Length: 273
Picture 1: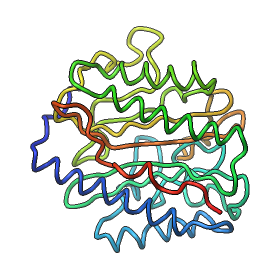
Picture 2 (picture 1 turned 30 degrees about the horizontal axis):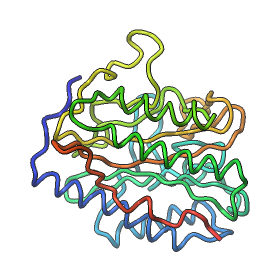
Picture 3 (picture 1 turned 90 degrees about the vertical axis):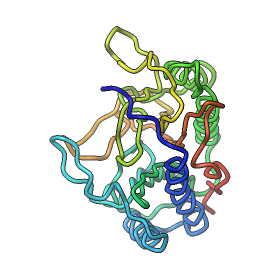
Picture 4 (picture 1 turned 30 degrees about the vertical axis):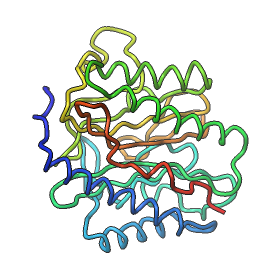
């Protein structure tokens, strides 16, 4: 599948407005989160906040083949649940030592915004602190590669080099970022790892074309990279039970380089005390 047509400057403004709704939700969430909250409470808070911001979740009711409709307004993934956690996937109150990945997807005036950040409850352990720093830095470095003259393989080489070679952690194979716009998912698929055999990742040599929107998202585990799911249910867990993090920005590739539409997300307070 080829890339969608490049978006216009007016569409870029609309995509930015949607992306900034996501940032606003995260900014408000970082101030609201507290020890003792539960995932159902977080999801209800997200639903109310989206309504206040005159947008709606693009995750609620989302469905892929062989899977049930996604039942929550946000993806809420705790500890060894790396992505696609539901509000019912972890019922205990969140407290010291827990890490929560919050992925917010919105529809606003016909456009999608989609970005995730990781929050630690209480002072993180040295390993978790290093894991979070690795995730944020890999995202920062990778975004710089999303520019004309590069392919999406440059993103993967940079992210993988930092996460696995420099930090000693592991990226989750088979999961990655994606194009988006008026739909939640579109071409290209943006792997976080370089392919190991021909045909593994068809978009590795796709050029970073101006006017392309991508949601890029390193998903990183402290332990082994293998995952498990419960049949075709939504949450994805680390098979060995290790801690994991997830970071995601929306990016518009321009003639001058990457424009981060979810700018400001990296400034949220990600320690819940």
